Image 1 (cartoon, rainbow, N blue to C red):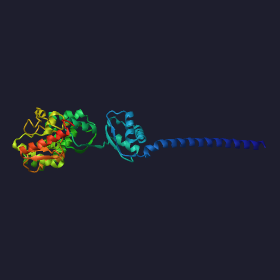
Image 2 (cartoon, rainbow, N blue to C red; image 1 turned 90 degrees about the horizontal axis):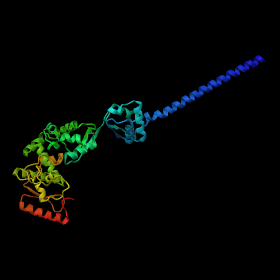
Image 3 (cartoon, rainbow, N blue to C red; image 1 turned 90 degrees about the vertical axis):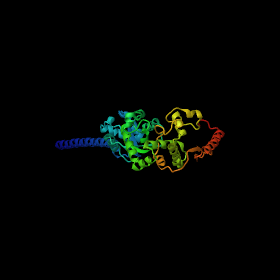
Image 4 (cartoon, rainbow, N blue to C red; image 1 turned 180 degrees about the vertical axis):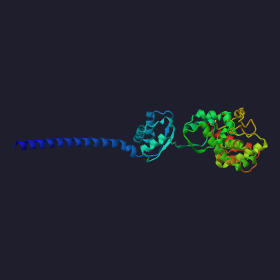
Length: 360
């Protein structure tokens, strides 16, 4: 009986130990599973979540980790940006030498986005400008879209040695920059930027256009300068060629161009709506009321379409023009000075009637 009790007690003890051990194993497994589930819940979004919309991320020089994280959240959305920043930390990515603009496409995962940033695979950004009158305005527009500063570009455009590299002067350097849309790396330098724009310039000025300019007795730079005056003069695009031919006629006859936009450029005030006699005496080589021929350079960044209008300007005998008194934006053209004076008087009367002063 005692032996039976001993055996029963031993069996119970073994069973108890077995149950305890199994329980500990189950608990351990449960803890491990919980850890794995928690880890999975943390890491899964870094691999599986998707960017909701395409965006460009701009990384500035020496950007700190906190600043970078804020930028990512701002550009990519709070959650996706934070996950991308986390992935960069896990990858131990050094972004201090990854200055640039990076396109993060829709449906990219944080891992994919982080790898693109880590590798430094820059994306080209679009730079578009429709007009600029001065180099200062142009440099400002460039600096708003690309990383280079306004002053860094402006200093180059005002440097005679830099301009000479392109066969230009600080007065004519603007002729190599056509208003249009282009693609550059965000980090492009002023020199590389200008080199590429010069390539576009040379592609535009092919042999056919050079021959047309020569037939007019003008160089490409002179054609561009004339086009810049035409652009400032016209309100209606279909008058460009007609206005251009009028100025060509005056050049050939040795007559002062007497283009009002050149006076505005000389004064430095493009808001002028009415030019008075005292303004015509502004002593500047750009003032075509005082100096014969074309100004030293363009008075705005002329477009390719207007340059072609100059090159293809239709023949006519007109040497005078005056804005129409109906303010339609068109001009009255004539070869007669007496008729021109009559046109001008009608226009002046309408200016007075409407109370239009120097500016408006």
